[in-house]
Image (cartoon, rainbow over all chains, first blue to last red):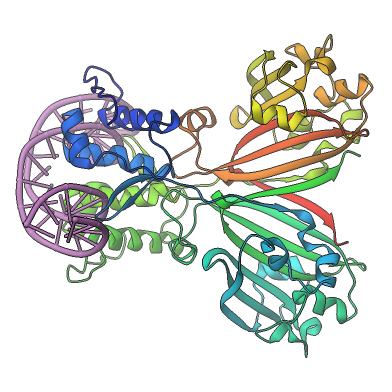
Length: 258
Length: 258
DNA sequence: TAGTGGTCTAGACCACAGC
DNA sequence: CTGTGGTCTAGACCACTAT
């Protein structure tokens, strides 16, 4: 059991925060390891001599920080992080496409079984942001591919790709299976040679919908990436938006000092 | 006032979640704009016919999502986001250093008044991670520069830079003012020509300490960057860790398709 | 002073997990 | 069945903001 520490009622630090800080310290110090169960609410009430709602407020703070996670009927546990995946910007390199691997398969190689899920393909009218990114007008439709990626049956990423119809027309880009090497391989077969990618990264708390689809626990932020594929003529031939569980990824980019 | 909607007590969706969803919807629909005050807890209790703790739980959900923010004695407000800053990877380009601008000053140009704060400079023993990143052994000390950046007096970034002593020795890198062009300019003056940067990006919830120093509201994630500066001989001559408020930044990287 | 959110109490009933 | 967390009530006192 944890070393018993009392709440200092004379302090102007509220009781629930003192309790949260105590538990945080025990986790940082390794007295509570990832996966360990925290003392139950009943135990914490007895230890600190406070009401249940006070204990729950302390626990809520840890949950919202992503340090702890509750399991109904079982207890509150120290968050155990699955291994982080490091994504280097060479995952879109042509050598992967030439081997018949789409970017996600190249990423997943050696890590587990990659699978796609919840796939929706169709033609859409681009909204204003997408028109600006793709450099098309309101009359041009885009082929949208929305899907979820799973690694060993665990959802890890939501993705939505957009390709102007004049590029995608008549290709497997409009099919459920876009073929070996993914849509970038198909775009190059249409005569557009990819020159460069521009990736924009931001982070925010997920929407309830994203939290559900990605199986995110409370207090877990999302990484949001928008990638543009640009051909040798400078045309943006594709845009992809992806949402990932932030705790599972480290992104790596190299750039020259000049 | 908001259109009155009742809580469906027969639903298995808890009352607090229905209330949260109602408020979320009003915000999404624009009925409540950024900066607007939400109905007070007393008003919400009366509207929905629930106890105060139920209302507070709904509000806590919105706060933890970063959608709303409470101000003691004033009310709960729809989060109004300050403008996002777009950071391109060319902010470390030599042309900025040649103009006497350190990276942060180059970033801030035209955006406001940049200032440094809470600066601590000293020699330290590198921990295991830092030794691996810098490629030095346990006997080599590093010069650490810890500081906070402010833009128009608003804290926007925490940074910690590390340079091996054999590079920093006798240079202004160990002084409070590292001079025009920043520490990268000083490192190059020592004969190390910078060739490449490698930046690693992740996101997580901030620690209480980071939340305090960056003035973050609840439910606001942090962007964490680790940057290595590599010279033409492949030596890592500097490492910087930075923590930023995620909602204020979009990072942009370009990379070739080859 | 009135109204706001912040903290806290002492109960209640419920749903879920595990024996 | 027992113990766990999830939801909810009906109060209380406090600290902060604005008038």
